[in-house]
Length: 213
Image (tube, rainbow, N blue to C red; front, side, top):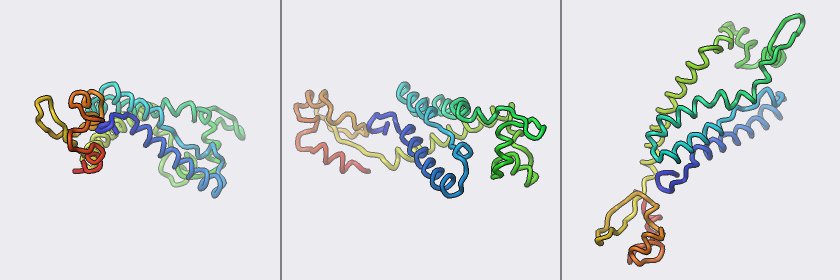
């Protein structure tokens, strides 16, 4: 979206599509099929993180700076953006004379993978191990992995979706460019006296269709 069309909404569109698919799975599989309460299987959201990532790309206009700063903000915003959704599970309660958190009590009622009760059953440990300073270590590690994956998939997308267009310079020299914004602009049309910024004898729409390399 950004390389050829300068539209910084790729991350937001992808995360929104992922969230919609996740909600479909939760409603049909977990809630309707397995009869789990909705608040037990509610998905996390990354839409706010994706907005920050796209805004970083829009302001810096550089995929490298976005990979360095935007992707780190994308990973580090996961916990703050989801805390208001799942903060209720940290409330204390007394059940059978024992002080528990609401998350622990929910785990006793519905034993499933990923809950403290399930992990105690299989004798691996407790999710409390991942509290405290370990949360921030995990956040920094996820930021590093996100930066690596962003760079790899940006290059893959740039290679697979590479298009080029032929344009005419000020001195009549034709050159190849991969910037779609040069074709169809008023400045280009006024400079060359052609409608929609198309060089004489060349169809802009045809070039858009044939530009795959």
